[in-house]
Image (cartoon, rainbow, N blue to C red; front, side):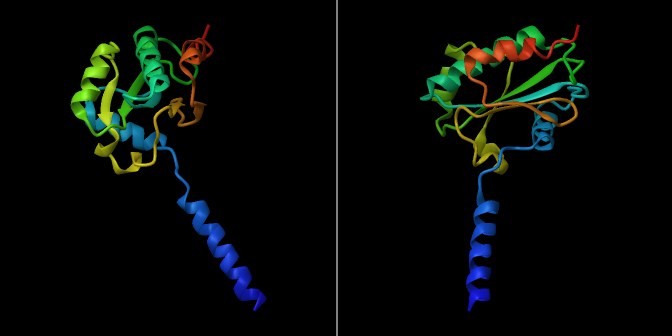
Length: 159
């Protein structure tokens, strides 16, 4: 009887662990970039995913800051990203028109834009999530607020 109960508890624990939402991996982000911009060489680049929503102002502010960061650091020599940065802007809203209007209003020009419904592995991401990977697929930063984006990239500068 104890073995059955122990097995059930262990099984439930295992299921809950596996069912937890996971962030996209570096390789999944690289595959998005290669499908959207096949001519872009992403070797030695920092890869960023920023997830935003029209209704979530904090995530929109972060999106604006990542767009500014891209303009500044696109070709900069960064730690483990000696050829700059590439940034994916992922919107979670179903309304494509509202998304385009918001992105235009916010001045988002340079980022690789996509909707989370385009890729099944993005189904669990939420607005405000962002992940910064270096070229070794190591997660450098996660869930930066808008006011931390600029200084985070400054910290990656090589001298």
